[in-house]
Amino acid sequence: MVFIEPQRDIPCLIAYLTIALTDGELANLKAEFELGACSQFNPLLELKIVPAPNDYIGKSHQYLRAKENEAGRDGAFVVIDEDYIKRHAIWFVDAFADTDMVENKEAESTEVVIKLLIRMDCLALSYINWEGNTIVLEDLDHAGVERPLKNDFWQPEVNDCGGLDMKEQQWDQVVDVTAEPGEFTETRDKTLLENFSPQPKVLGKLKDKVAKAAGLIASWTFINEAEPIDMPDGSQKTFPVGSVLLQQAYNPEAPWPKYKWPKGSLITFKNGNLQFRKPSQDEVNSDSQESAEPELPSPLHSAPRFEGTAWDMLLQKCKPVPKVPERPWQPPAGSMCYLMSIPAEIRLKIYRRLLISRHHARLHKSKEGFRLVAKETWGYFLDIHPQILRTCRQVNQEATPILYSQTLFQRGYKWPCQHTDSGTRIRTPLSDTSPISQANLASISRIYLCRGYKEWLRNGKLAVLDEFPHLKELQLAIDFNDILEMEAGSFEDLAKDTIRAIHHERPDIPCFKMEIRLCFHGREYDNWGREYTRGKESFSVHLIKKAEIEAWMRQEGMFSGRFLSWSFKTLRSEYCGPSCYISFSCEESRQKARYIKCEVRDDDMEAFGLLEVDSDEKEISVDIAI
Image 1 (tube, rainbow, N blue to C red):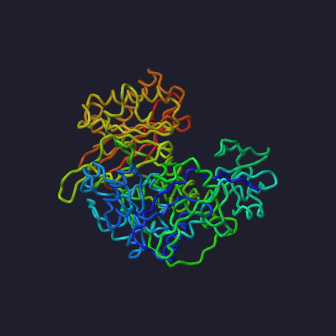
Image 2: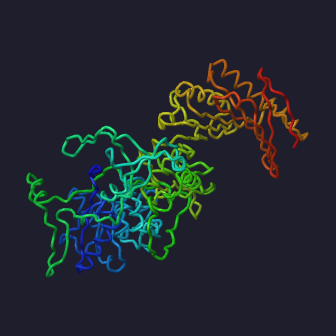
Image 3: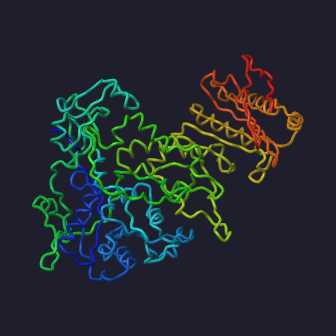
């Protein structure tokens, strides 16, 4: 029989029942939770339904939150009240607003309770997302709640996970399975291998009979070597030579055993009295040394099983997906869902198209850590669709690394501000930002620095190299005319100190690019300006600065084993005059450094050309007519 590692530390929430329900209503409530939490085969969350203390009946959520805090239970909890009957939803009660929320006008005071009215079947998936890197405030935005928050606010729309079909998402749950020789099969069929990226030499899947017996769906997947597994009792589970680790999907329609609700959870009403689930003899034995009076546990802060996205509310407030009529659905044979039936290399292209923007994602640091910041009022939208990350666990696992590792993040140093309708300038509220989990922060590999020059270097070290240890691409932009940021004479030193720091700390960084906007004054600029007025562009001022930088780098021994690939750009504008830019990148190949890419743009047109660099590194003058 294949081995599936037992689940550990499943998060558990307390749900206080403040109203009387019929047996049918209670059964429906529990069935809804089990559906969304995949409780029968892959529990994402557990819920302990208990009658609310008499002191809680008829009281506000603010009162309940305060009492829970007094009792030392500061974790989130659930309230099942009359809104379950009226609006078919329950309340997720999080915490009191903090001072930052008040300062950013997200809440009236620190006595305001952050809470959300949500469908019971959406609770588990949403909770896992909140534990990952989304926040309840984002979902309140989508539900149409006005800011600043007040206690007992009105929530116009019940949160329904954007209309996600909870029955359908059960087919997307996957698990790592250890299979011994004879329980799985392999293939080297090229037509199948080509569907995976990176392309493996061999694929594997459980044999159909084995998968069916385990309640799984057999489908081709990557093969990993099986490793010993530490068991809850301290022992170690080992496997025969030749055993493999495969990722397979659960079959929700398999004959799974009935889900057992947590000990002490309400199961029914009988003759008007509350009835609770009695623990089995095994549970009694395991708890024999515990207190006879069960303690209400606070939520476990374990690693999320399904990480949400910190991007959903950035740059545009996404409305819930329109609901569509429920229809019968079956997964295609050998696949978890229709998206999973598409070849892997095509799926990766889909993810990149939906998640990668040609614009920068803005990244700032708060007291709690790094946060993604919405666009400035003058900025642009990223025009991406991170909602796909909530499709299912496998899509999340496949696409999240693409989002964080391939997006170019602009590291900002001054917390951004925005203007209100009245013209007042305020700090961007936290509700327009999203936190990033440590796992996703570690995946970031592309950083862009622009302005905030004084914060770049600390004692000769470039801060981002420590903040993002897996950095593979670093782009920098320096404007020598940005006198509001620094004194004009300091920019030359800034550029040199930055290059020196990168060479000292990360000389092998795969991609390093720097763009410099040259000064609007000086003899070289004046000489170039006279050529510009004749309608020609020889890039003379660009070439002079290029020669200066190359001479300095040779003298300092910077990146001596690599080649510099240069680009020149001139922006002409009727309103603000011409601007000259030079940029270079460190390359491993001499071929990429053979030509200098040249570009000229004005308000109406653009032109491109190449300046060839000969073997003696002497530029061949080429004029580009405009």
